[in-house]
Image (cartoon, rainbow, N blue to C red; front, side, top):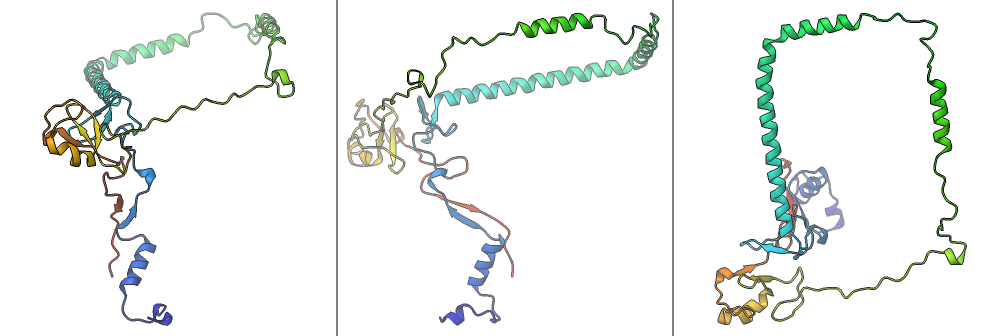
Amino acid sequence: MTRHGKNCTAGAVYTYHEKKKDTAASGYGTQSIRLGKDAIKDFDCCCLSLQPCQDPVMTPDGFLYEKQAILEYILHHKTETAKKMKAYEKQKQAQKSSSQLESKSEERERVERFKTKENSIVSKPINPFTSGQNPGGEKSRTNAAESSSSAPVASSSQSLPCFWVPSLTPQSKPTLLKKPDRYVCAVTRDVLGNSVPCTVLRPSGAVVTQECVEKLIKKDMLDPLSGDKLSDRDLIPLQRGGTGFAASGVDLRAKEARPVMMV
């Protein structure tokens, strides 16, 4: 097709290319986007806290959790339930007491009117010559002066860091680096990562690669670490990726359904 044909705007037919272009520009139609690396959690992170696990536990479906995060969630749920129950009991008691107070509303109003009248009665004559003076004003000013004079003063003998005196210049020593830990397969010692499918052996709790399962373990169906007999139920695939807004596994595209532009 020539350049003139691509830019032709005098056609009587609304082409698919024009419809797709206008849909993307106007915000109509289902939009699809591929998720980036930041939207996928690491394989060794808890599904609740999204942080690396220190004391990991796993569900039968292969989802990894931090034991402390689960206990904190259960404790938080119990606390919230206790709060709601306490608020419900308080509301129930308030409803019961309000029904009793309604029957005594006239007596309460009579008491309030009596208090108002009593407060309006002046029991001591007011002296117009001393009403605006504060007898303890001089004393309060004296106490304020004494308290301000007794404020603590910073000692000049304290040694502070100084960037101009060589002996007082703060020094920064180099931090000793430690060898980083890496997750490896319990059998083949291959490095584990987000792109490596992993499987958990139920009897021993060891994490091995799926390749190790297919080539070594499935032949004899024995746990290489504990020697226990394995079944298909004992091989739990470790779920990879996925957060609260991203799918797990290999489905790394997010879709949003929006109104469709009809022509």
